[in-house]
Length: 450
View (cartoon, rainbow, N blue to C red):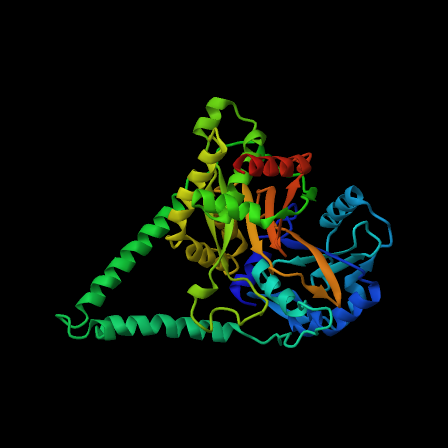
């Protein structure tokens, strides 16, 4: 396994399993259709036929010799209303997945009010949210009469290729620096002089970026930092038109992501258990995943629609001391602009991948380096702008819940799909007893900004 995948096995804790949960509402989907979909299309990615196994000193993918889709699909015939469905999904979040089989499972509730509910839980070592998004985009066409054309991938050993690509990539840059003859410096003074200055500049900046990353202030003690109980609940909001977010972003010269983070900051504020004076001095960050595929050379980044993990993390300060919706929004804008220009995502990706290469005793200090710097995980996944179809049935809603690592007990997810946006929240019961109220506050902040 690549270090970026096995890291999520190395960093897992029993009270905080590293599983991604996805829910689709699909009109008219039956158990037979879903079973055929999984047998034909889903398992075309050979990784889903494998389970991770530890063979010192590394993790490997090993095919399950007794694999059957029936081991990974449960059909529940209850007629859930909306509240009952949310409770049922929460219960599945707390249901452990067997480690002697590939670590993923589907559930289907075909009789749920509002359309069939399909639930998927999958360990983070298989793929990140963007990989899964690309795979579902392949498997779910824009027409009920269209079939997926290209899909699936063999699970081949990639570590050797990955290391070779990394060596060539780094070696080519060292060679250029030694020769001092880059094409863009020819004829400009001393050959290589400009590149040498650039190398020094980049090296200095890298050292500065690493020091800045390590120096990110730890979050203040708050009710979001209580010891976890290991029992989680999740909720999701009604769909909101994406144009509402775009209108706010356009009027304030911010981004849709800034608006989303401002809503989260407002919902977090009353749940910290702090006085007004404590809020004025509070430090609180959200860990936000950032895709870095375009920054890596070919051979190191996953192929298109290939499962895997290729993202870094930025720690966005949340202005919980802000007194107005606009103040919170503009402060979020200021912080995200700085982070967009930083190397923090790549540094975080490298440190995370390195966790799986460390002995168990050395992982905790590295994990604590991340977990003490954030009180929540906030992930924004853009879906397709048009309606998609699974096994010929229209997908009316998409939702996912992001895993939290270490002692972080709050995860907020935002999904856009077919012109609509939905908020989702998952929280340890020690952090949020009633997660639905958190979503109401997110929507109230949106109303204030409108």
